[in-house]
Length: 279
Image (cartoon, rainbow, N blue to C red):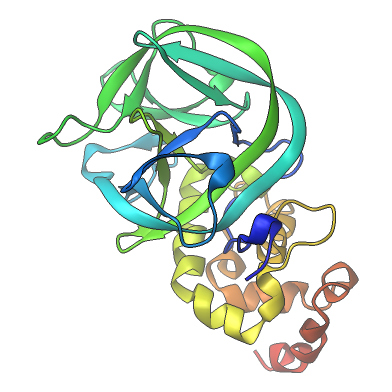
């Protein structure tokens, strides 16, 4: 395992970097052992996640796709940049709750028909409702009304990746119950497409890592794993198009194996080209 602070780099998911959609160092997550600040998370830490069965291409989440809270485990980071200094949005909700996210981060918001839709943070304002975990014994989600929003300076950008027995951790659960999705239009993928890609790669991640140990490495001065950058590099060339390579990790690795930028940090990729030529 490798990465910043001893944490493993993640399996592919919508990556970060420039234009990252992230939480800040102010985030406090809910775990089975109590609240834990995001800056102190490390590999294998248990956290609570809210699982989704899918996301619509219209960025809406159907009630039947709300699978509920599950116990997950930190497997890496889509973004880990403690030195980043950025302007972010800070939302205040209920009496004292606050949430800091980058301006393009997607949040779960109550739609006009009381459904759930993903909206970028800069589209959300006073009077909107943010999704939170349901009350005990209830299903679906509960809602917290936004009282105000403002731009603040923040240090550190973070987005952990979590897996649970129910699948990939689609949505992080903050200590006060607010739900924060990990998906955004990173690398040209829509949230719906990104969900599908992460599910496939998560299923094969351990096998892939055994074959290609470089995949969880993080290049110097980069904030995402090699695998994340592979997916992002490929998907940016096909905006909003989900191709077979993205749903077949071995095909995507074959596609990028000959690129010098990846061979420099993954020398073993030079050995897979012959196998790829046979596919």
